[in-house]
Image (spheres, rainbow, N blue to C red):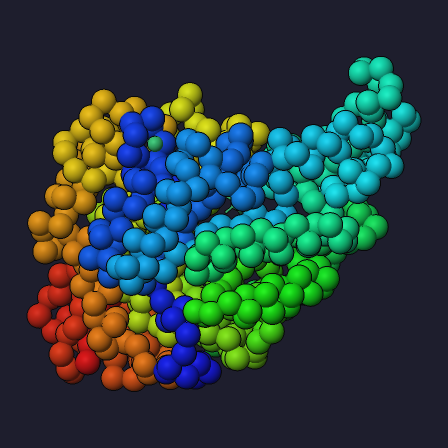
Length: 541
Ligand code: GLC
Ligand code: MG
């Protein structure tokens, strides 16, 4: 198995990115929300940890119905998070420390408080103001049913009806599409005003010095033109039966087709953004958040004339299993090789359950999480870390009355707040240095986090923090520059990879296994002489 990147290349090809979730990273002013000056004050921390780049989640003016992914002004900073000059300071201080900064771009939808949407509501049906969004008449008698059967990602119908300004307020008017919350109306990317606006936004931030963009819902911008119903379609696929991989039986399943996602027209947008980015110096880049159905469709976003990277969510969706991990590694490397791109890897972010908890929680979940991280960081390409994973934080069971995520509010079951609890920096109780003494964090911080603070862990060579720092150092020294990856063993309970001089073993089984000969460079947990215990990974040279 060989990936196709060359050893030298632009900075992002093998960079380790650290995702800063703005409202939960560091609060400089004590209002309970993290902010830009808070991030700036912690840049040295990130440099010491050993990451190369920071991805900062949305800080733009926003009513915060979806934690800032509902933008009402694409060219500013929400006063809760600071001022535009604070962002300039963040960029210049990060660059001085040798860190790159990538910002989030939210092109699929605006906030319902964006001037465009307010104008659309005021202007009424048939107006050019409404044509920037997807307004349609409803179905059925009086247009009382939504225009199609699509559902919002957060639960409930993807359409909301608005009154017509020309009729009495209780008369129903058109419906507008929102694939997420009703406060996040989808833009119509077939309207040339929309791409033109976003090209200006890209230039605005590039001119200020950002190194790149994380493109939110990158697979969503175009919907099937007819906005037809979503349908059930039969799909034949291989079932994962134990035994010889050649024996995969074909099974018939029904899946919903996706007329709202991953439409071919979206790729022209990314071709034009690539050209725009290339007008700037410094290898500016963009990474797509594209939840596509296969590694092959993910690879279409990173063709040579499109975006530089796409998140590869396969590992984050995989169970704790050497075979599953091997399939992810193989599938990813094969897919990016089709288009000559570099792979990316990620185990956690602000939208999913933190990986120690996914792997069962408690000491075993943490041991597995560290093992998976060590395995991932051995691979070529770039990796994305989510704030707090270097502390081994688990998903927090946020009490219902404190929940703020719209997906929780719509469904009462799915919620992402548990991965978004603020970072504990020091001390023995809330707010653990997240903000000045007396700060009430926007989500409550658990009572038992004193041993997990940054201060506590930096003093302890066996802590998860020290493990991340040691691994990132070892990655720079030993793992970079050599890009051939072989899967030596991936069909048993142990994943065994080889990358250049490195042997990487991850023991997903229940029994210890013998280590290969050589020098142990890093281990995700204690070793037992020449044995690699279960739930542990190791790099051997
Ligand atoms: C992306 C973001 C998520 C947000 C959604 C809508 O998936 O990561 O947090 O809710 O887009 O913008
Ligand atoms: Mg604050």
